[in-house]
Length: 357
Image (cartoon, rainbow, N blue to C red; front, side):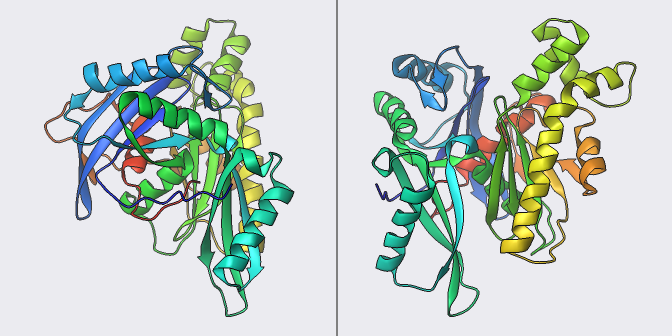
């Protein structure tokens, strides 16, 4: 079913229900700077979500309510919310089409959904945006589709809480919004975002907009489990080792690297695949300027160097905090926890016209 997924009112806050934490954040924007009005985070209770669907609606609503009412720092000033959906649960296609009328484009996108998405169209929400018109005869169109079951579960939680769900976006789209506004990037130069989440590692290529997305369906949890098995330690100890030692130089570096490299090498393969697609379909000969790492697993020591060595692209952790986004009088999160809130900040910055994806 073709669904309008564009909304135009602010303020809004970002809400991210992840596999490890439930987080929210609201921003107040002043020109090229923003400050945090309210934020908070709690550990996700088990068995709330499965395959992207919130399967325990009452429990999820109870947890979000507790987060907003009891664990918030600052004052939330709106009930309008933007929520994130993992890239792995969104079908995205970049279509090269001849220039056509809106009615013809509606029909063309519907046909593409029916032919290329492995879910019946009646079970999907989908929409599209014209990315660019390179000449009078052709245009690039980005089509996105998400299972109704996932989006409807988000709506159900919001309905229980009296929240107005204004928009659902992929986490990588939210990351891109934040980076385009508050990262010091060379204008017009494409770059890559790598979002290290709990259940997946998502990748996107941006220039003036988000062009290509991909995902590896193993994330921070898989990295932790691999370290636990390699070093014969508990999951909790492995998590601490991942955060404090990572794959930076040290006595256990080679063992830890051996544990996590099969997962990280899949990310490298996905990055290189996306670069080829970008160069062939969107911008031939473009040089990717850098890789920005975001997400809860962004601060794993040595990760940036690993990606740089494999791709020959300069890599760093995205950190707009302080310079561009201030917590003002609020006590900020621990430094290691700041990357967890990047997606929420991006969600809160959703532009006036935006589409899921």
